[in-house]
Image (cartoon, rainbow over all chains, first blue to last red; front, side, top):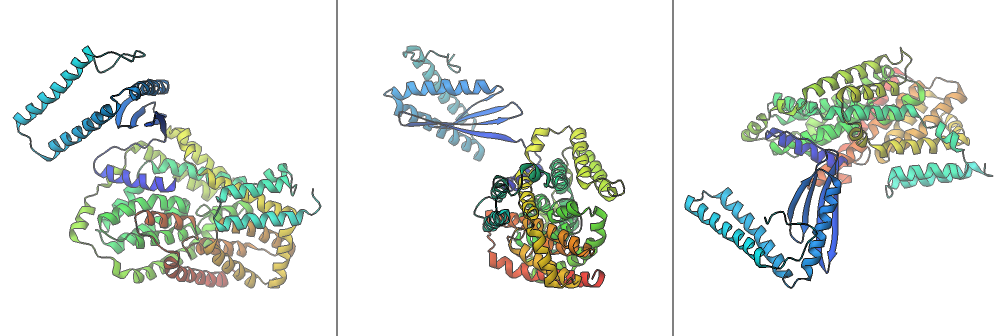
Length: 159
Length: 424
C-alpha cells in the first residue's frame, strides 16, 4: 500500500505540473475470467463510491464496453456478452470473427498514429472516410440478409 | 491458569518475537497469534488482556493518521518541497539540506513513515528532473526523519509508547530530547555533505526545467488546506497544553482528527480505509504479549537481574539501555523492543524506588536513532529502499550499513555525552 501511495503521489505531482486536475479514488478493480469452449473471455471493471463503473472486455480482444451507473447493469451486460460469446464460439466463423476484430483494432491504432504523427492531405482523409463508410454499409447490408441467432437483447449499434 | 504459566508465556513470547525478527511471517499476524495464544493457554484471561492494551498509544496513532491522510490531500507538502527546491535555485546540496530539514520538522509532528511517504515522491520527481541519483537525498531524509522523530512525543512510535506508559507529556519530550536531536541533525548533515560532495552535478538545462515547476498548481483545494492547517495547529497547541489541562495525548489527536473529519466533510469511509490498520493491530498484539510476561512476573525478575547487573548505578543502567536499544533497533523492529523495555524500566522503578526518568530518554534516543543504523532498522528505511529498488537502483544491506552504521554510532556517542552531562 505504501509503495502504491508513493507511486500515485509521484504521478499526481507530474500530472498536476502538466496542468491536470487529479482526483484519486479508492476503488476495487475486478478481473472476471470465463473460458468458453477453450476461448478465454475476460473483463475488467472498477467499483468505486462515485457510482461510475468502467467496464472493459480485455479478451479475446480489448474493447471499452461502457461506463455504468448501476452495478446490477454491469453484471447483466457481462451476462449478455457471455451468452453472445457462447453462441459465437459454436459458429464455424469464430476464427474469422476474432481475426477481423483484432484487425479492426490494429486498423484503429494505425489510423491514430497516422493522424498523430503526420499531416494528412484532405483528399486522403476523404478517401479513408469513404472506405470506413463502405465497411459500415457492408456490415448493415449483411445484417439485412443474415439469419439472426441471438434474441435476448436487440443490437445497440446496428439500427 | 495452567500449572506453569511462566514457562508457557516465555515460550510463546520467544517464538513470537523470533518469528517477528525473522520477517518470514507478517509481523501483525504473528503478534496477534502470539497474543491470542497467551489467552488460549490461560497465561492471562481475555478481560485482562484487553485491559492491558495501551489505548492512549492506539488512539494517538489513529488520530494522527487521520489528520495526515486528510492533510496530504491538500498538496501542502508538494507546495513546500517545490517552493524550497526553487528557492535553492536547483543547487543539489541546498535541496538535500532543505528537504532534510523539512523531513526532520515534519517527522517531529507526524510519524517517520508518513514523513517519508510525503517527501519521497517529491524528491524522486525533483531528482529525476535534475538527473541526479536519488539515493543521497532519500538517505539524508531517512536520517532526518528518524532524528526529527526522536524530538517529540508524537514523532516516533517508541516515544508514543513511552509517553503512553509513563505520562510524560509532549513538552517533556521536547525539553529533554529536542536539543540533542538538533545537535545530532547538524552533525549528521555536516558528515553527509562530506560523504556525498562528489555526487552533485547538474546541468543548467535541467536546473531550468526544475525551476519551471509551479508550486501553486499543487494546492488543488484551498479551503481544505486552510481547514487542515488550522486543525493541525490546534492539535499541536493541544499537545503543548495537554498536561496543563490533564488530557491524554490520544484525546488531543482524536479531537483534531474528528474536528478535521467534521469540518472538511471528507468521506470517513475513504479516510478510515487508508489508516494503517496492520500497524495498529501489531501494537495491540505486542501490548498483550508483553503484558502477559509482566502478568506472570517475568519482567519483574528481569528488572531485578538488571539492577543487580548494574549495581543500581544510574550511569551504567542508562548507558546500557541507550547502547543496547541502539544496536538492537538497528537490526530488529524497535517497537517490540521498546514494548518489552517499558515494563522492565517501570519494574526497576518499583523495585529500587529511584527516579528512572533519565532511562526513558536513554530508551527513546537509543530506539529512535538506532533505527538509522541499517536498511532494516526502521520502517522508513525499508520503504525508501523499496522505492529505490523499484526504480532499478537496489541498495544492498552491507552497502547501506557501511554508510549508515558509523553515522548512527556518531549520533549515539552524542547522545551518550548529552545524557552523562545533563542527567546522570
